[in-house]
Length: 402
Image (cartoon, rainbow, N blue to C red; front, side, top):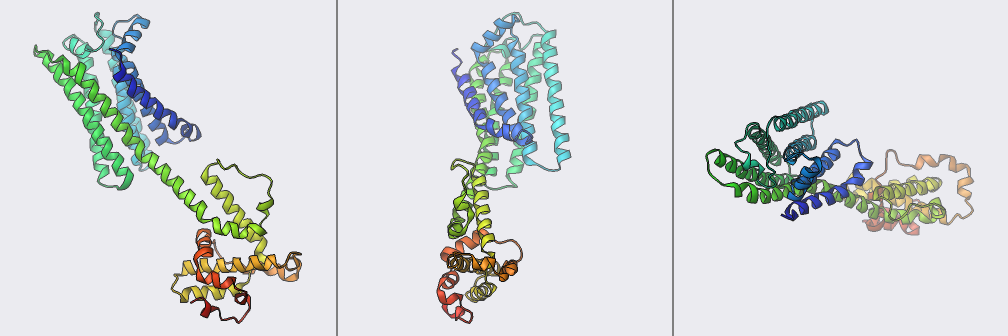
């Protein structure tokens, strides 16, 4: 009765909660994140307070024999409610309907908690039972009703979870579907746990002794079910975050050629304060995009609409779709402008009257910076524009970019 089979999963839930804690602090208003953290917290508390050593300690500290029984039952009911609330918020839908369903679940299981406490106070459980309370008091007045109530509440939650997650899994794909199917498997273990509990209790009602099902088999099934379900809940959220980070890093990397192209003529090269390398990747992407925009702002007086127009025609002729052709044309114009700026160290073009018309060379609408950056490295149209002849009006631009 060292409680290791209880404390190990409790510790696992604690570790998972610790990992989630920073995100919870940053996004406290996110109902989905709050529901995940509530579920992990309650799961850890259930295992901690259900451990025989903890049961004995709580009973001893409070001076109330078997007070741990309603405590654990209430925690189990709250855990069931948190699972249902998490799935409801996870699935989404109209916000008002989601809030209304959440309130109903919380209210329903709140009534269960109050009823469990009331039944315990009305009953009598003078003999301390650390591992077989359910079966020992299966026929005691009020204790019997309390035991049945918590088992029924858990069964309703288990069936509802399997139904909701199973039906939802048929409608989605990817990591979300995998997570939902894992939750279903976890709750099948939970239903097996409840089946063993019910079987042992009913056996007691009929004068038989199957207590080992409740005291030995049930805890193992409950531990497996809770940990499998926790993996199912966390997997899609973790994979989504990893996927978002991967996409951000991919964007950061693909912006590299354009960022380096503009670096010699951009003010960011001399900027004293830069974000740290360990800063969030989304912030680093924003910084790189800002540097690119700053660099192009300084190049506006050197932009040549003729270069862009010829590059666009050449890209279309080479088979690029309009969006790709626009990106190649913009990239070609930037490459030529960078060379023109390098050839004008005194900034005579910037100070000339012609600079007043620089904004006319800027393409209408937002630029696709990522496509522009890729085009700088791989487009034959941009490679042709980099050649000196490509900057002269009348050059055979189409011929050299086919």
